[in-house]
Image (cartoon, rainbow, N blue to C red):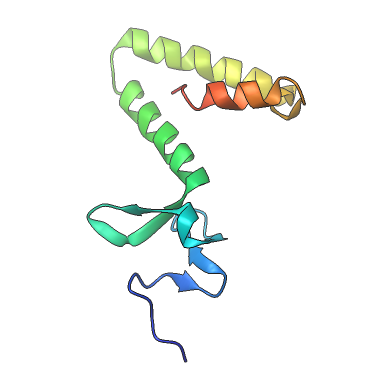
Length: 101
C-alpha cells in the first residue's frame, strides 16, 4: 500500500480534480490557497469562475440581471445551433465565453 500524498488526492495517473473527478498531472491542477489539499483542474476553474460571476451579477441590480438574461439567450442560441463546434467560429465563441458572466 502506498503512503498518502501530502494533499491526499493523488491517484495513479496524477491528481484528481475535486470538481469533475478526472485525473490530471500536478501541473494542470490549481490548488486553493488556504486549503492546498483541494485541487481543481484548469477547465473547471473557468466553469467555477463563470458560476461565481453569474451569482454575483444575479444578486445585483436590475440592469445587470437584464444583461445576464440577454447573455443566456445568446449562449443558448449558439448551443442549439452547435456553433461552438464550428471550425471557424468555434474558437472565437469559446474565447468570448470566458469573459461573459
